[in-house]
Image (cartoon, rainbow, N blue to C red; front, side):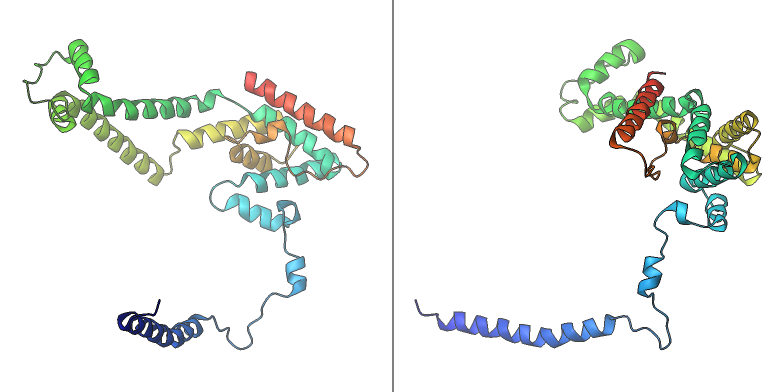
Length: 273
């Protein structure tokens, strides 16, 4: 089948556009290439080889900066505590992990997290329930019969979910609006407390956990223990054993398997509590 004159003309235009776009794309690529100034030092192979790849390879100063700057860094706080235990107890790095695991289990607490868990479940439940309470006639009618006792809509005024919503909004607007305004006031109050340097519940809870752990292990540096307690107030992964710990070079496969089984047993016991 021979190409028609129209087809050949179209192919010619496409080829011309590609030919014109090629140098433009090349120029754009050259213009966006990052050209380093003269004398700029770039990393060498030695620099790449000496790059810290784990928190245990950081210096003490770097760990202090990570812990004290901004939100608590649990890995940096754990590493500081490990080194403090090594220094005070005179033990190896791997042996210090046993003491840190003991401190992590002592710092574990579920009651302090109860307000957060209740708030999360309440918000999820209320959010999902609000949809059928506003737009479902079946659910709204049952709710109205029990709690509201308002007049039902006339025939033909509940054919769509928007019509149902206009009927239910008469009694749903006051609670939803009041709850929204209440939450807004609580948020504003919390912001002002933070501006005055007062502690909200989260900071108070962390301070309580820190004081409790420091009092239980007075042999170690109080500030380091408190930083660890605050950083792991909501992170209880250390209770099952510290991850990424270097294995004992003399340990056999059976020893490693027994250690993993023991940590799993601790995890199941903690979950049962």
